[in-house]
Length: 519
Image (cartoon, rainbow, N blue to C red):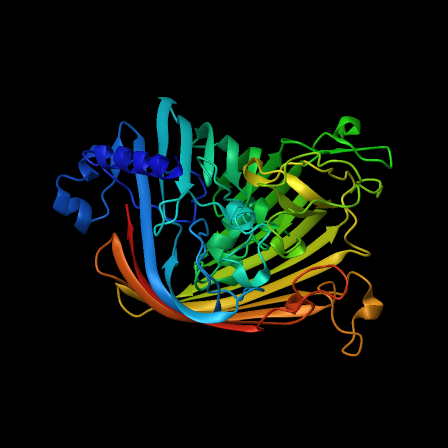
């Protein structure tokens, strides 16, 4: 059914090809939906569609999309997983062997979308956007949650690629929202939308969020303000406005989904489970400005009941015993009765309240563009805990929940910088550097070489990348590059329990090449 959904979207875009098309990019403009181009700018022929950047637009409605796929080699990788949409360029805790592989979505997420901006009175517009991502090598909708559930119960050596992310098999796993826009008063939208941190990351990352060459693009920690599931917010209100060189953004997320349940009794059964309400509200602000060739933004985000899903390494190595919490996450009573929910298609999550402050800037000095950014993230145990059966992205349920994972606040800091060099009008060369640092946040006394490190100990992650991107036409480009990533200290430990399990390898080298077609 998933593949049929993707094929249906492809058919829609093909039919719409008799109209015009507009190239899509991962970086949204100050107004989420740009005005439709005049009909005279549309594609008059198939050759024009292929060779220029004319748009597939009809009466203010535009169909857009991108297809990005390549091949690569990794020094420490895993079996491929058709639901994984990020490839394997970044170091993975379970990576265990070198291999050649199909590398999806290296510069941009493959996907399709439809957007509209229709004027209903002078300077007032109705706006809409719906977009989804899929994996070019498998045709499956992008679904990082399924990379975990398909590995449930397997021994570590048998894992395929696993991870966490906001795209969890939803029909529109990127965005789906509607609203109104005013030429003078800004744009107000409601629905599933990219977080303000995601917008800023895409705008100020030298690699533009490229999965194969950007740590902050591959790992949504930065864009999501602490957890990658929060790079997109469901049930969210978003407002953006610009005045001269200054722009402002605000965002608020309403509570949604299930808060799970718990038992007040020390003897846990499904019959004694008490439902909990979700309290996963969130809010964010963005202040920015542009002057001459310089621009900068400050973004603050706060998210309650943020969920970080861990891979099946936490569970038993047996397909007949799916993992479920042994302690009630809310009152720590033992769970001794039958499973409250089924465990065949569920996840294990750590719950926190997250606050993040991002500062980013860029400067253009032709033919160079310089980028730099910093984010300070603070994670604490949630003020409103979640229970067993709480829902994560995509409606997946948690059969294992931790609400008291942190003995003290976890502080994560991320720095990045880079430069993009325009060799000519068609070729760019991009060099990037990313650094993550975390503090000792759980049992600090155990954090010493003699005692052995835990994942809650201070640690670092670094990634450097270099790639060349050449455009043959406005729509079609090819690229080649390499990324190197490494971890140390607590970030080189796989799970936050006991002494932890070390990464199989602490480095990963990943050369990649491929092509992209965008319309």
